[in-house]
Amino acid sequence: MANLHIYIETKSIGQYTSKRMPKKACLLSFGCRLNQSEIVTLGEQLEELGIQVSRQLAPDIDLLIINTCAVTNQAISKCTQTLRSLVLKFPRAHVIVTGCYSILGKKILSKMNGIDLIVSNSNKNSIAALALEIIFKPKTKLPVVLEDPNPEPVGYFSQKIPRASYNKRYNLKIQNGCNFFCSYCIIPFTRGSPQSRDFENILEDAKAHAAIGLKEIIITGVNIGTYENHGRKLLDVINALDTIDGIVRIRISSIEFKTIDDKILEKMADKNHKLAAYLHIPIQSAANPILSAMKRRYSFEEFYSYTEKISKFIPGIGLGTDIMVGFPGESEKNFLESVEFLKTSPIQYAHVFTFSPRPGTPAAISQSFVSEQEKLGRSKFLRQISREKKSEFYNSNIGQIVDVLFEDRQNGKFPGYTENYIKVLTDCPENITNQIRRVKVVKNEQTHVIGELIF
Ligand code: SF4
Image (tube, rainbow, N blue to C red; front, side, top):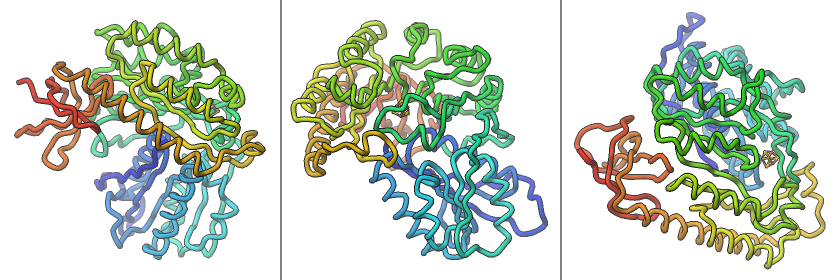
């Protein structure tokens, strides 16, 4: 998972609950799409309580909320470095740390000066109210840890103030947690066992965001294929979203391919359904002994034939994967199997991770770690192949006419994404933000393509 920050745009619209001056908060999020979706919800909850949520890390910030990620050691150091520098830079701001590293790293975080509250993922929904409580009090010397072992149900959102300004695509959380227990993964420990959000609550949330103009919904969670609420499954969520006015595109975020119902593929292939022809299905390794040591639930052959099946069934589908390099015991031969897979499969790009031991997971106690230098070399090699595959895919789209949902203009051009997740940059004198427009793909610029509007 790539690290990224989200700054939520300033727009105070809440009714302030006291006569004191409005307080300002800035929210930073690292890690996955699920974390992004939760920080957006938190921003909305803060605004409901009258706390302004600012895009800028301005000197008058009263509250900083850092939503951390613990997926790799690199992710953790990025979070802690940012935290340390922000605490120094904004000494008067109250600081709340949450996300996957909050409880995992609580021993380290608890000793850090400047943090007021450490809140577990399962207590994220209490943060807005807690923030309102602490924000008028003096800063604490050492952090208070809030860790409720009983996770809250997922259908808890109270988004009375949905906001369109931060993005043109809405990450809709439908699920949390996982009990697959892949041997390297910390998520079952940081986010608990699977919890599916209330079906009606999901639809309310989607309708509220569609009503303010959001056109694309990205279905988000840890293991979304396991969604189940009173007999309703992921397919039911997708079909219900398809009926909502204003939503023009539904996208599934990362999903375990074994959990995909074939009927979902039929919806993807159906041009009259809003479900985008796009799948991000993690393989992690193409070597069977490694897949088995990872406790993944499929063989390489099963995965490969699935990618062949869907690329035939849904021509033009966007297909991405995750590959982890340097899992304990990964030999040169095992690694080359992943290389060969990426080169020859219908997959168009891979998000390449390097293994880092997560304390408490079975893979962390292995005796056969791959050296850091080797891991770096393997990642670099595989990332280059991924770039080449993506470029091939872009080339194959040159001359095609595609529909693009455009976002805010940046550096004079409008960026946007196609249904199959090609990034397109386009020149246009008029504002086409948040519009679906038809373009002709004319040039591959490696990280994106150039499209010309068809008027
Ligand atoms: S499926 Fe495996 S890798 Fe994915 S969250 Fe669950 S345990 Fe982690």
